[in-house]
Length: 392
Ligand code: ADP
Image (cartoon, rainbow, N blue to C red):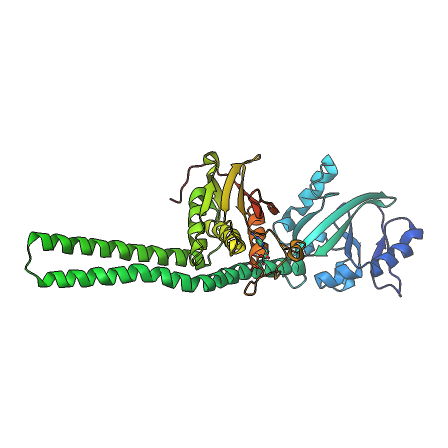
């Protein structure tokens, strides 16, 4: 194999021609102007030429790279294995990266590593076999994706806290009931202690104390639900009972609904109860949908709210929250799942967009359709779990 080393005074790039002289100037002009990082190596892995963008990306001066083995641009373990990779390809023609492209890691001159997308093509030239690599720096893209993920997590958390804000007064009210009951049982027990301790009085004191204990457990349960709901925590998928998730979310959603009594009718498919989900997140989806339905029923003559589930194909269950409200307002319908679209004076318009994100993060879909009950229906799918329930 013979390579003529050519270096033009006006060329920015060192360049070893590999045969066809006539294409040299053309090749050089491409390398100087192509916005992508591009590196050409020979069958031994030695760098023949590279684009100006590649030199900048890796932090090398042009003259430093030509003739060096391309290993220089890789961190371990690829650095040590690259010769073997090339050998295997040349002997077997079995492509692991050539013509496929992959996300991998590259190394700058200063020793720092960065994520790249690498696509390689190979060609026979009069001067021998050459490989051309196109490299895209993913640092920025990955940082953006991470920022978006953080933001999403933050939004989910904020919307939960904001939902909590509106639930807080209702919860305070709910907590007040067991606390008032405890106080009056205690007062009763104290006044009974002032009378002579006959067996009947003692039994009444015992009953009052037992009631007080039960009420304080009830208060504790309300606080636990609240804490579970607001706790941040990483997404953790476990096997959970859909029936239990619906029951808990409906209980939370109905708190403080005012004088209008609304029952949540449930028709849950018993053969599709165990789902693999992040319990708190799916509870939030159910809570958003049920609260939206409850709000849609305010001041309606007929108030029906139904949660149904049905096993679907491909190991999924479809959950539907349907109401007999007025349906989706036409001006909202086209933007339904977009954030900050709301028809409510105190709405944030985040519930549906966050719910959709959560469902999609579980590999499912969330959509809206007309409800048999006359109003809106929101349906979403969740993955079924094969194992038994393990979260109680
Ligand atoms: P928010 O509840 O804060 O307004 P959402 O994202 O939960 O935000 O809902 C956006 C809008 O979609 C609501 O303001 C409402 O107009 C409409 N919507 C959602 N659910 C229903 C429903 N069950 N019936 C009628 N309209 C609904």
